[in-house]
Each structure stands twice: as structure tokens, then as C-alpha cells.
Amino acid sequence: MLKFLLLCALVAANRAALPLEEEEDVLVLKKTNFEEALEAHPNILVEFYAPWCGHCKALAPEYAKAAGMLKADGSDIRLAKVDATEETELAQEFGVRGYPTIKFFKGGDKSSPKEYTEVGQSPGIRMAAALKPGYLTAAVAVLHQRFLPSPTWSRLWDDYSQLRQESTPAGRQADDIVNWLKKRTGPAAPTLKDVAQAESLIADNEVAVIGFFKDVESEGAKAYIKAAEAVDDVPFGITSDDAIFSKFEVTKDAVVLFKKFDEGRNVYDGEITKEDLLHYIKANQLPLVIEFTEQTAPKIFGGDIKSHILLFVPKASKDFQEKLDQFKKAATGFKGKILFIFIDSDVDDNQRILEFFGLKKEECPALRLITLEDEMTKYKPETPEITAENVVAFCTAFTEGKLKPHLMSQDLPEGWDKNPVKVLVGKNFEEIVFDPKKNVFVEFYAPWCGHCKQLAPIWDQLGEKYKDSPDVVVAKMDSTANEIEAVKVHSFPTLKFFPASEERKIIDYSGERTLEGFTKFLESGGKEGGAPVGDDEDDEVDDLDLEDTEDADSDADEGHDEL
Image (cartoon, rainbow, N blue to C red):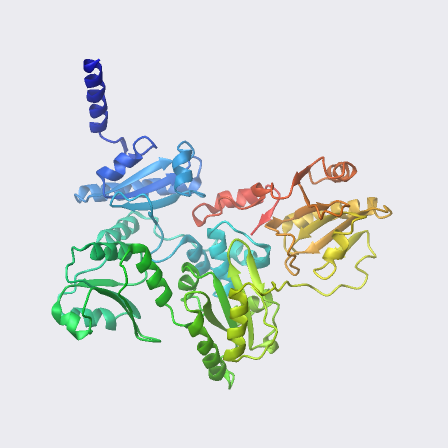
């Protein structure tokens, strides 16, 4: 028995000693050797790819070239790849939803790998940069990155579809890859040896962070370095120099965020952990009130604060500064909870944002509040006057959960019920679809949606077929102009059936989009071709990624115009 155990141990040791498989200087990783690779190589860039992905194939030679360049330089940085279609557990563990997905692992840490993107930019923000500047475009980009498409951002998709053909994702050449990695593997917080270096760091940047540690090898200093490694858009420094401590009036270990606005500096002297420092930095690196622009969008949407209050105001107006001062006065009490943003309502690129909130230029200044959580929710204040007291009351009611969502609705059109297909808007939706004596079949559409246009004649035929039915109603609603609390639409067209019942039941239609298919569905009471609401997840965008737009296009061809 002892001999057997010794033999097993020797076999295991030999396996561990075997070098990792390589292809053109790129390590080939699987679930069985992934952790081993992280332990052996402290700096490793991993591409999760699919063999059929056109963008992955285009990247392959440059990726291999970069691996060879680093190897020739004697660098400790390695490049690796994982076939995500085979290693599905790894792909799921690291949230791979599109191809290629590239992540950088440092120090053997699996918990928080960095996405390989342009410096300081996520894929969603890079999409926004390709579009016209505006709150709307950046918000769409972030929501796409999180795979939470929403019809409320509908018309933007036209812009994206056109502009993505003209823009090429950066950072896919060998030199780009090598340069990105070298930046990530340099010191996250360079040592500041004298006052001049510290003053230069502060003077040269809008925001800068300095860690003051008597012992730069302390646990607090190590946590500080970890936090510095996790932040791309703010420069860090670290010091133990007494003269620097004295110059900035720091008497004990602390982290100080220096900024050229608001208070000028924020001192963190609590328990120093990576998580607490990251929260502190994100909470303090933005002004109390920030203007939405193309340049500020990454910071606005890249932070942890997902509740935004927006002041729409023309900057050229005589009372602009007065309104902004009132807004800023209210912001102090909600720091870290609600992000205060103002938008110039005179800027052409911001008009779609106004449209999204149901505003017109002549109605500004105006306030709106939005949450960018699982489902976007908008709120409108009861009083339009912009005063600090009114803004505080509005935000307080929001944080206490006392506000009701503000839902857009078109006015009820004349003759909405004269044609076989009835027209629904927000104002008559509940009354019609939840009539306990009616079976109501609704198409939620977008005016620009190609698949909706293809469906239109068939839907009209269905309406004609049931126009004289006493208990069946065929209807449609423009979901880009009407919002319903009971129904969340994620793609176009979306078809839902509301059977005659007191239970307010909703059934998703997932069958063929033919007159015969629709007829069988209605005649079966929503059973043939139906699915319980919530089972239509396949209709949502699973792999919309700037890195593989061809594959995203093919998804749209399957019968939905996704957002």
C-alpha cells in the first residue's frame, strides 16, 4: 500500500512539473491547468475565444506576435487562451458573454481580473465614444455592457448600427497589447521621494491620490497598492518621506485624495482595506455636481452610484448659475447616494436625452431622476421650481422609497379603437389588457424596427380575423413612446397575451410569426406557442460585444431587433 501511495505521489509530481502546452508562444489553458498557470505566471493575459468567431480569428496572429515579443524580451508577462466553447465552466466563472473576451490576471488573483480594453475604458464606454456624445448614448453603452437592453433607448440603435461600421475597436495590434500590459505591470503607485515629486503629481492631474505610510511594507500600504492596481483613471503615489508628511500636514498613516474642485482634498484615515479605499475614491473623485459630456461619461457610468438626478438647464440662460448653485447646495447631503448631473438643454446632441425623458427645450430648466439598476426607472418631481429645498425633498422621498415611477404615455389618439388592430398607449393600457372579460394579444413594437415592419401585414390580418370577436382583442403599442410598469420589453417585436382573467396573467408568445401560428395560439387560450412570462430570456442580447459585432448582427436576423 505504501509503495502504491508513493507511486501516485510521483505521478502527481511529474504531472505538475510538465510544462504548460503552448501554441505560437501562447499558453493553452483548460480548467485542469488554469490555476497552475496563474501560480506559475504572476502576470498573464487570457483570451476567452470561440473557434468560429471571426474577430477571434482576426486577433490570433497579432495575439501570437505579442506573446512572442514579450517572450523575446525576457518578460515575465505571458499570454494565454481558453476555448470558451469547450471550457464552459471557466467561461461562466469569469462572466464571458461575447468573443473574444480578454482578461488580465495579476499576482495569481482570480477574484478581480481586469478587462482588456483601452486604458480607463470599458467596452460599453468605448461604444459610447463611437457614438454622438450625450447622456442617452453613454447610458445605452453601459446597459449593453451589462446585457440589459431596453427599448426606451430605441432610436439610438440606428446611430450605433451605422457608426459601428465606421469605427474599429482599438488595441488589437501586437504593439497595442504589449504596451497595455507594460502599463499594467509597472508600479501602480510609484514611490514619491521628495516634496517636489508629490507636488508635481498633484499639479499635473485633476485628481490624484497619495498614500502616506510610515512603513511602506505595512498591511495598510499593501492594501493601498491593491486598490491602486484596480483604478485606471486616477494616478497614485506612495510615500514615507517625513518632509512630504509635514508639507501636507499628515501626522499618521492615511490616504489623501487631492482634487482641483470642491473641498480640494479628502482624507481617509479609517481602516485601510482595498474595498473601503475603492469606495472612498469613487465617492470623492467626482465633483458634487458634474456636467454630462462625452469626456465625463466614463466616470459617470463607471462608478458605483446608479441613481442619477439630472438638471436640464440651458447654460446660456441668465439664471444658469443661480439654478446650478441651488442644485449644488442640495447635493451635499446625498454624496455617495445620488449622483448630481446637469445637462445643457441647448446642445443639439442632448436633444434625444430630453426626448427620452419626455421633455422639450422650452420646459427647461427641469429635474428628473433615474436609476440604472436591473430595470431603469424614472422619477419626476411634483413641483417644477428649482430650489435647494425642493431638490432635497425630491431626493429624500426617493431614498425613502416614497416616489412612484414616472411613466411616459402618448395621448390617446382619435379612433384608437376604430381599426381591427386597436392602438394602446400608456393611458389606456391597463383598462384594455386587464379587462377580465377580454383575451388581449398585444404587439409591443418600435417604429424603426425592421422585424416589426415585416410583421405588420400579418398582424393586420390577425386583427381582421378577430375584429368581430366578442372576447378577443388584437392590439399594438409603440414601446418607444409608452412605458408600462407591468411589462418590461427587451426586444422588438415582443408579443404578449393577456387572457381573460381576474389574475392579471401574462403569457409570452414564442411560436411562429404566421397567421396560422397566431390563430392556433389564440384558439388554444395561449397554450400552443406560449410560454410563461419570464421564459423568453433567449430574446435578450447574450453576446452583444464590440469585439464580435458580426455575431450580434446574426442574432438580430433571427427575428428580433435587439437594443
